[in-house]
Amino acid sequence: MATITQRKAADGSLSYRAQVRVKRDGQIVHSEAKTFSKEKLAKDWAAKLEQVLKGDGAVERRKIAKLLVGDLLRRYIDEVGEVQKFGRTKRYVMENLIKKPIAKKLIGDLTAADVIAHCKLRLGEGAGPSTIAQDVIYLGSALGVAKPLWGLHITKKAVDDAYPTLHALKLIGKSDYRERRVVANELAELLVYKPKAFQHGRTPPMADIIRFAISTCMRQEEICNALWMDVNEAKRTLLVRQRKDPSKKEINDQEIPLLGDAWDIVQRQPKTDPRIFPYNPRSVGAAFIRMCKALAIEDLRFHDLRHEGISRLFEAGYQIQEVAMVSGHKSWGSLRRYTNLRPESLHGKYEVLSSSASAAVQVIGGAVVEARPAEVLPVGQKSDRR
Image 1 (cartoon, rainbow, N blue to C red):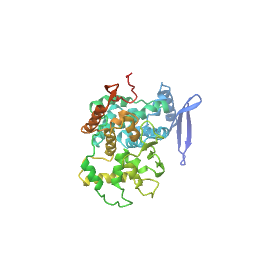
Image 2: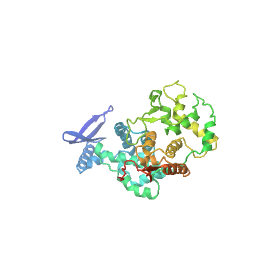
Image 3: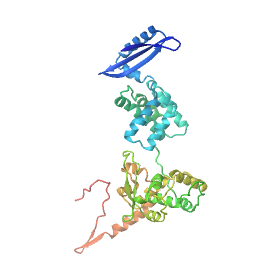
Image 4: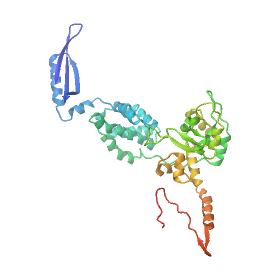
């Protein structure tokens, strides 16, 4: 229904404001207004718009006519993010998307070519296939909820149509498994290296932090957020709060054993703060990078210490579920990415198994009976021995 309102300016001139509203079940679902210098122009515009809005799906299309991709992403972050409690990575990716040229595209004009162009731009900025894939996934997520959640006539067709070409051009893909482990001489150099004092605040005890990272398989943020109140003296365990888990955003606390040197390292830290290691995680990461640079250690990241710790646990003979109790992984598929066993480490374990098998001989009723070695089965699989 259209209404025409006459308005008189201070100089006496007249203008005409045309407003068109569409109601459904007594509720206004769409409203548009425009001002003209002549009444006839206002009436003509209103009549034409009313006719357009009678078309099937016209109101929905009209709603998104001036909606930008960035507007949709912002609404997705503000509303969906509040419910889902986005992790730091997802929120960072989406905030970064809003800063890119694709965010200035009209939703109705978005095509697969635009998505591909964005991915090429990200490649030029130095992003890898797995990082670029996150952009595409989260863009598709925002487009996908627009219709059921907000009633906007939007689909993720542009993203779906872009996928075959993105894969063919290898612009998107899974992240490469890192196989980098710290070798003995590198670790020895890192542990004796004395980093320069920080300009502001205390210098982190990097030798202790490096040892602790390997022994506990903890991330640098987890290490720097660990609290004295979460140390269990009787059980020699530590409660790691809010551990990273893609499927569980809100509460994911985990109690881990403080194995090897980890317990002693904790005990010798001064209790001057609620945190065991009261340092900024970024400062710890930056110090580690500077140490590696000073020692000419190439392609080693602090996160590789987590890989090192997990690999050492497997080499020591711990089972999958036992390693997961330390690392926090929920499945073998995700834990496997952090496991980089050294082939030479299997020799010692084989010798132990061989000696155990040789010793497993029983004398029963004068007869020599060789005991069968324990059967090693995947987690959850039962033996068919009777």
